Amino acid sequence: MLNSLKRRFPISQWLPGYEWNEFKCDLLAGLTLACTLIPQALGFALLANVPITYGLYSSIFTTFVYTLFGSSKDTTIGPTAVQSMFTGYYVSIGNLNYAALLSFISGILQIIFGLLRLDFIVDLIPFPVISAFTNATVITIAVSQLPGFFGVPKRDKIPLRSFDASQEILTLGIANFLGSFFHAFPGAVSFNRAMILHTSGVKTQMCNVITGIVVLLSMLPIISPAFHYIPITTLSAVVICAVVLLGKPQDFVFMYRTNIVDFVLYMVTFLLTLLAGLVPGILTGIALFILNLLAKIIRPQIECQLKQVTYEENNNHSCYPYLHVRPTQSIHFPSIDYLVSKTIESLPNISTAKSCDTKFVVVIDGKHMFHTDSTFLKGIKDFAVCVQRRGIQIIFHNFQTAIVQKLHSMFKDNKIAFNESQENDDLIKAIQTAYSGTFKV
Image (tube, rainbow, N blue to C red; front, side, top):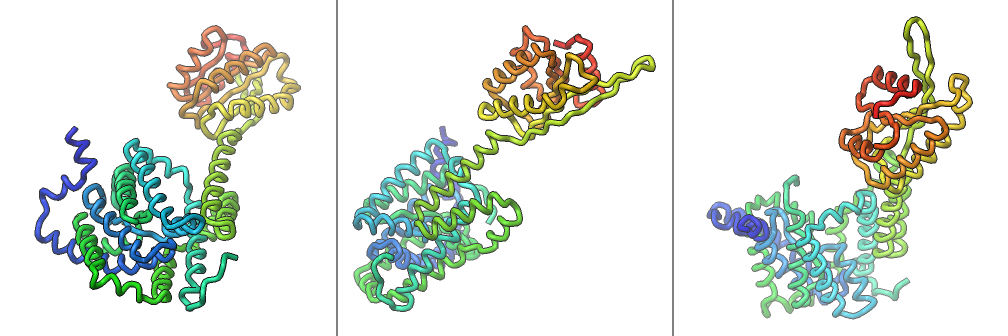
């Protein structure tokens, strides 16, 4: 119970031993971060289509919340370019209240994800989607700020550290949830600001308190009115400078050289995000990559090769042909039918072999199969029983012990050969035994 509370409140782990030397480092890092965060917050508020002071609101509560719940000293929460772009999209189709509503809803969802430890869902978004979306967003944001940068009136629309991912999502959710009651729009972790903290020599999460206090002081009545006189050109320049480093054009070349399918899906995501918008782009990209992943599961690579072994006994040579079937990955319920059909398709080509009269052997090699499910077991049993009636015998070769035990339980009433050894001599003996009609059950 105590360990769970400490994990939920990381401040209890570092605050009791907090020292003066650490405070001096955190003070410097916090002041440095504040000097960066304030202009960025104003610029991102412009990007989010909300009053620029809303950017400061979004920067205050997040810093204090992260001090209490954050698990990484190099991390801070605040307005980001992508989050601001999303907020601006919904504010443009609704009204100003949509910004707080978006922060409220996203905060609730993030709190649920954090409490239930659903951070693994992020793994469903592959690197090509993130890269394509980020590069397209950088271009979209930069182009959207060019009119303000040049003073043109806007026209109508034509570092390696371990951290607790679940705790970070929970912290982000709490920050967005509380911020929604104070005109804050959704925030997130900024890698640029994290790098500033790291290079400034930050020691603990106390730096977020320093940053929050400085941002809070900037909202005093004698200071905040001056923000309204900041030229739009200046804020646009801040936004462009903040996002330009996020783009990674080299990813185009990397995708093309490594995987052509990923490159095509990358380009589709990139172009859709650029032309159709952020929401259609990211959703379509995720959907396409999930479909690509499912396609690899449903249609795995299966090697089917006709082979034969020569068995010599008392100067008599015997040739035993067999079909060697080797899936290159674990087979589950979506792909069992494909495995069976792929095996059956290979049988007619070898059924007329001269050395094969009425019997034939199929060796299913499970070298690359590490786990399976009940659908596979049932499907492979039905297949084995069916081909046995045609004089074709099945040998399960090189399977993991756990899978062999399950197969044994499925084939109690059927004569099926199991060869758990990885040695070729043992496989040859198993094939010879199968042709002789005696089986190891």
